[in-house]
Image (cartoon, rainbow, N blue to C red; front, side, top):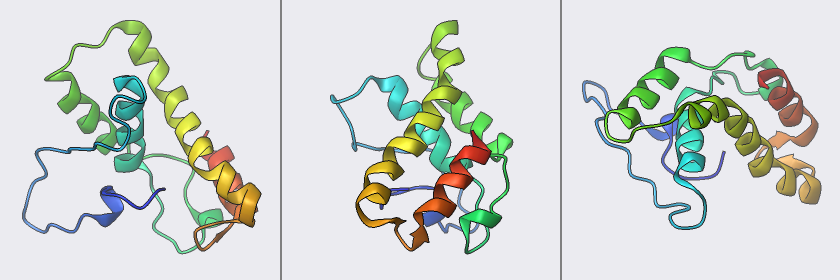
Length: 122
């Protein structure tokens, strides 16, 4: 994932995160894209050094908590709700593909391993 505030970079023992502010793509993409991106960042499960060993699932509790927090402020119609998982997958692919095509790697991860992880999670 891109170098910004995400669940992997938060270390706040005894502190509950109540607000997430992300101006990464403000006015560039529809708000639902940022919502899907946030859901991805806060629910992706890694836990091991190599993405080939990452589990196939997302942290469903964190994903649903993030979505519920958003929905406390913004109403979402059924079409938007139905599009969120597809947008999460699109986000994973879009963030990885150019870097992998250019360098063969995504950060320190071998591109093939990272793309296989995306395929499993999708």
